[in-house]
Image 1: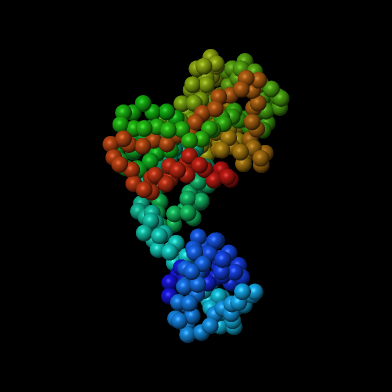
Image 2: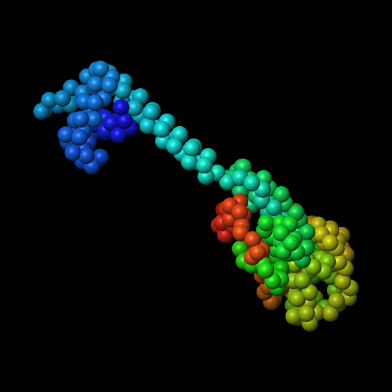
Length: 296
């Protein structure tokens, strides 16, 4: 008995005709007849009553028809599972991520990734952009996710997602009540920023330089959460990723200052070492970054 014979028998039953079954399976009618005859010999029973005018399945033929469908489904499932076993991706994936990505975006990405690749062990380190770049260069991490730029040699950098930056202020701040704010309105304010080496801190420094903004004071913190808390408590205004402040704005804890001039956007990027060959876990993670889940 062969799978081909079972497939032929199932098709004969469903088509109620040897000729049509042969056409569907690209088999000659004698081949179809031979498959049925071989099955009848194997099971020592008549499976099909056939005449020039009709084709009828016998009771034992009906029994074999139901079991044959089950056997083919089981064969297909087993084949898929064996293929998956030999092609499943295992190992450890070490990811370095800057604070904005690591605290707000990466958990969303890794939820779907972990469901699809449960055999990959994930290790995540969160630090500022400069330190993440160095960790990839020193091969301490397989891949780095950053919000800034790098000119380091022996590293490839590839953008994978656009990030919107917004100016935020305490809800009671005078600028929070304005429908549109001009650059001049930002002069002589106290700004709360991230530390040197942070992609967010670099973005704010670039913004302030580009528009010639005078700062009354510049206060730095080493985490997004600290910056957000400082602004919420009235210490000053800041520029942060929309990923960081979205919930706080929705809950009325912070206000977005809407500029007359459109703020810049920046790109989230991943960095890879060019001195090693990347493992399968890294490659499938890169595929996910380039084709992120719908909810991201």
